[in-house]
Amino acid sequence: MERVSKINYYLDIAEAVLRRGTCTRKNYGCIIVKNDEIISTGYTGAPRGRKNCIDLGYCTKKKFFPDVRHGGYDACRSVHAEQNAMLSASRKDMIDSSMFLVGIRQDTGTYEDGASPCQICRKLIINSGIKYVYVRIDKEHYEQIVVENWIKEDDSLNGITTY
Figure 1: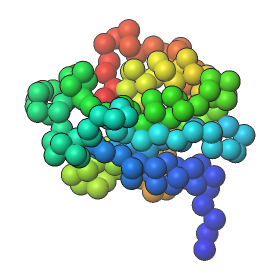
Figure 2: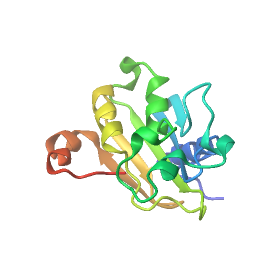
Figure 3: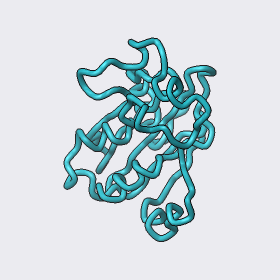
Figure 4: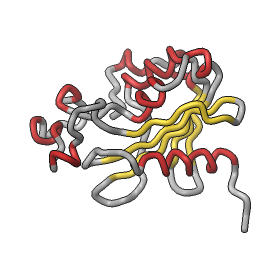
């Protein structure tokens, strides 16, 4: 058996976390790691105590905004995996840490093509002090994002949406 790389090891853990997700369209799992220690995990789901879309049997965003891909977030019941992971960690622990993110589409069971944190999550990641974000492309490949580049190359000034 070949030893898995450390980055894919953490992405495998994030992928296991996403199985707790409750979105009917796509689920994400996220872990935050610092000094080879997992300091937090998060998955996509409604706020505590609220019904999840899987419990309702439909996606509220698609119900109210069926043709909108980039928008309608106020109708979405889910808190993003990245947000849930950051909520469960202290900022002092997140400074210079790495985030590992995996997304899987519910309709196909495949990895989310072009997955990347949305603009809201990007702002939170920047403020949290996280240094790198690793996003799974497929079981062996990933993209490394240097968070500092989101500051230097601020695509939000060009009206670019990421979700």
